[in-house]
Amino acid sequence: MSLIVTTAHKPATAVTQLARDIAARLGVPFVPRDRSLAAIKEKYADCDLIVAAANGPVIHTAAGEYFFHLSMAELRIKNLINGKHDHMVNAMGLRAGMSVLDCTLGLATDAIVASFVAGAQGAVTGLESSPAIALITGYGLQQVTVDSDVDITGSLRRIQVENTAYDQYLTTLADNSFDIVYFDPMFRNPLYKSSNVNPIRTLANMNPLTPAAVQQACRVARHKVVVKEAAGSAEFVRLGLLTVLGGKYSRVQYGVIDCRSKMGNGGQPWSV
Ligand SMILES: C[S@@+](CC[C@H](N)C(=O)[O-])C[C@H]1O[C@@H](n2cnc3c(N)ncnc32)[C@H](O)[C@@H]1O
Image 1 (tube, rainbow, N blue to C red):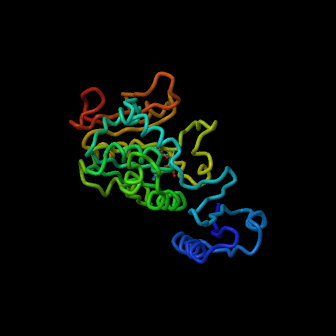
Image 2: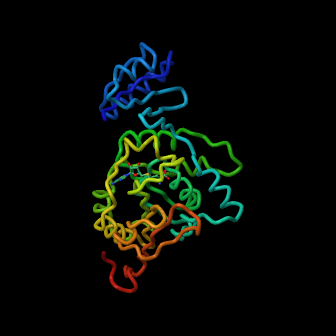
Image 3: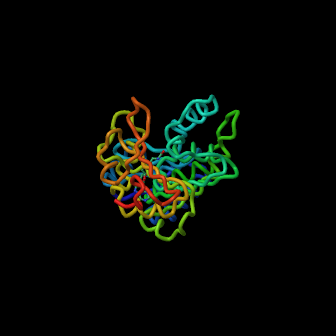
């Protein structure tokens, strides 16, 4: 599906400039807002649409709208502060000062939680291959301010976004260059109900995670490679993830490879 960029109704000059900048960055047409949004959608029926507005860009797809928001990140951070477990953080063994490579940034919900735990001494890099998703998420991480007792805004700002595919990017990294390498690919069997990923489904990279990428990740990770999937997914076995963690009643689980000795799979050198 192709993409066009327009503005909200009666845009301020800065909003028009934002729309033009986005169009230029993505290499897609800028369409002036000379009619209703419904009329633009009708005229460009075969396109997804980015609408630049005063509070940031919004993607309109057939499946819904995506604008940057914290989703469950804020609640998960508050739960952590209140001493509750977060299954992703536990699976990663994540602590302050660690570095995380999130290979599938998406809406950055997981990356924000990781960035909060890693703190100012840690680092989170998020890779996203979809230019439109990387743009909206990257914009939000740099521009949105969160009104909270704890410094969630700082956690957003510290995430470094790279619009690139992990498959190639991982091969460019030195051994042991991140503590944790994390994947949350589009699930093979999506949990459609109430999934906050629904609006980006048509824009997202749907390719499955490959054993080769997991192997690269294990080379790059000093501590752990963690893969999120639907609970009970056959992907865990296919990818050679023998340790699977998560809540008893949770709809998702985390496959973990401990890379510290580069010996996974029950003491054998890690391979699938
Ligand atoms: C399920 S979403 C991730 C959600 C994310 N963990 C969060 O908390 O918001 C998967 C994302 O990974 C991206 N993706 C899939 N394959 C990729 C690849 N090879 N390289 C980079 N990004 C990829 C998709 O485009 C999509 O945005």
